[in-house]
Amino acid sequence: MNAKLSEGLKTTFLVHFIVALIFGLGFLLIPITVGNLYGLKIQETEVWRLLGAAMLGFAASSWFAYKATHWESVRIVVLAEIVWTILGTLVMLYALLFAGFPALGWLNAIILAGFGAAFGWFYSRK
Image 1 (tube, one colour):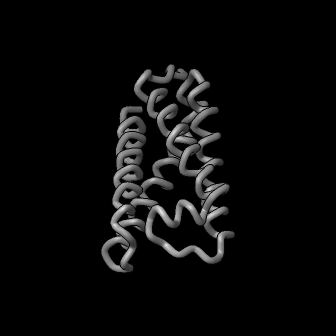
Image 2 (cartoon, one colour; image 1 turned 30 degrees about the horizontal axis):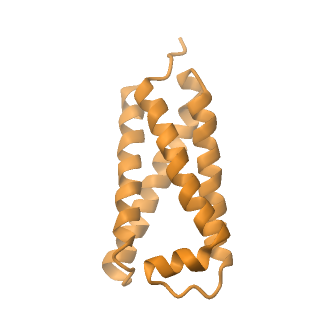
């Protein structure tokens, strides 16, 4: 039986779409400006633009998942989000605690951890 998506998961996908779209566009289109907000001196923009492109890919997958109606249609997207957000949180924590990343990085760590917890919770409910 293919269960319908809960409204909570649909809302999580929509919020994730919006957040990933904002950050993704920033890193893709204006990486130096975004870097300045973080207090980073970005000289080579290619890696930051690649991160922005990846985030836009996750934004698109969340949009498509938001439009879906059944769990089996989004199951693999939820799993990918769990992996991405947990690894992203760990990388940000390492950067903040051991690599001198600016304090604004805590915002990224909190956002990633929040989405990781949300997607993990919805996955565990299925």
